[in-house]
Image (cartoon, rainbow, N blue to C red):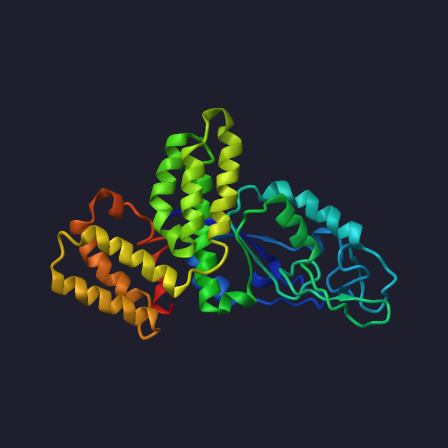
Length: 316
């Protein structure tokens, strides 16, 4: 069995009663669907900062660019330093995680759209991330991060899982012992995944890797990681997937008969029009690639970037 990937998670999402009201926001998606593949490192920055459970509810106030954390019924209070200090102290313990699932709408853990209130009680038009999330992003800028609520969107869900598995492979296979050879192998295996997301950035990243000098290997690996995760930052489009599948089909044309190729093209076009899910053309391609694809094609993580049991491509 594949070893579970360690990811961070807001403690309330796995049922720990750490919310301001003494409750939790247990997520069946995290505890049932994803727990088969992820091992969770739970953390609540507000509890780590020493705030009681239960406690008065909190919110961000003041300047949206540098807000203060205060109590809802006492906007003059400022407990920002307490939470930020606890968050910073926790960062070194998170070096081994390869993803993070956050609680939405939290002034500490929210990923985005967190309101910042003015002294008159009305929110600013500008929103932001939570204070803990800010520290997490500063420390681990390439870490796959998502809110639990957004994971109920099938495209965001698939993209988050993809990023976690790719990031895990990069960190565990390449960054533990960086070499040009390992970077080249990683790039080759993940090329079609990247092309489906952004062809031009993939080409540019390949050129960057080809020109990398050994003396600048560590800095180059860090830059590669940044650009690689940037390519995967948003879900791939249908057009991106179709272009990549047609590219793969080009490797098979000398071995697959004309009628079968036409059938494959027809299924790919049906997927592009939204008439079929991604699993349909991918299943057909996977029927031919083991026999006719050759080592380069069959080594591509594009075909199985995450466990098939998740069924993520069934709904795309």
